[in-house]
Amino acid sequence: MDFSLTPEVDAVRRRIRAFVEERLIPLEADPASYDEHENIARPLLERMRAEARAEGLWALQMPKERGGGGLSMTGLAACYEEMNRSIFGPVVFHGAAPDDGNMRLLNMVGTEAQKDRWLQPIIDGKVQSSFAMTEPDGCGSDPSLTYTRAERKGNDRWVIHGRKHFITGAAEARHFILIARTGEDERRGLTAFLFHADQPGWRIVRRIPIMGPEEHGGHCELEFDGLEVADEDVLMGVGDGLRATQIRLGPARLTHCMRWTGMGRRALEIAMERIENRMAFGSRLADKESVQQMIGQAAMELDIGRLLTMRAAWLLDQGSLARKEISMAKIVVADALHRAVDTALQLLGAHGYSKDTPVEWMYRYARQARLVDGASEVHRMVLAGFLRRRGKEFFAWGADHG
Image (cartoon, helix red, strand yellow):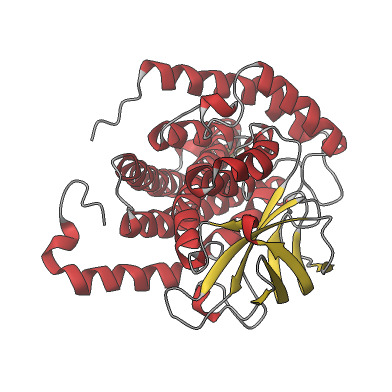
């Protein structure tokens, strides 16, 4: 593959870089920019979103005819990286999880009526969305352990009972995609349902406190006690829930990687500025071999992750599912992000451990990367499975559409 960007994509990337450096990064140093959960405060977010939309930098993953940017996955890889050089970037440009993955799924598999009702308000930024799959003592990386159940009621609706937890953004979401069991078949036993926050029969049990900063709406535990969903709000078809989950989670994992490479780069940028100017024991930190080893290793691992991410993005653009390539990128980028942020914090010393820079924010955020959208150990199992099945073809070049 050719790693050069088209002139059109590179122009968008440069405009994002300028917006991030001129409008967003300066906001990070002001405590008033944050809400009580350490994310960008909602009034400020809405102002920055309006500016991003006015610059034509809004919802780049969505079709132009629906108000998005119409970029390919390789284009998004370059642009999402630039966005997350600010900790506020992805949500300002409407490229943050979970809306990013939910919009992509609805755009790919929704009917035109479902797109108009459920997707367009998300694209427009009028509502926030959530994807409700993970369960207490049930499914996480393994959707087959779904216990939340949907039972037929009459001829045209379903009634749902069960619990979900760690549902990102649920406290502020209005549109939900819910995975529930409708049968016992291993492949066809799950179904995806669409529902609105105002519908009765469900509640937020609690907003779960977490180690790091939170997305808007947090990570919540939900209870379903008679939620009713009409047939017209079944996404894809009855029994297609596992397929819908797979369609959503593959690209969503990769867009995480795209954003994480940007955060890792920013952490190293902050560290580089410090070590080029900080004197210790007669020389700058940047001139000390031990420091050069740390920085060089972190930069190399981050760039390896970027290459794996771009390869997987290219394969998706060719029509491949890129399952093993996405798993590779997810493992490597999660580790590279942590290495970059940990290295930056170490080189900044007490300055990095303080809140004088965003590095300590990044450090707490980065630890989740090896857990969300499949723990690294699960992705290594996926890769082992591919190697056992394909043997020498595991290392084939090009797109195999598998």
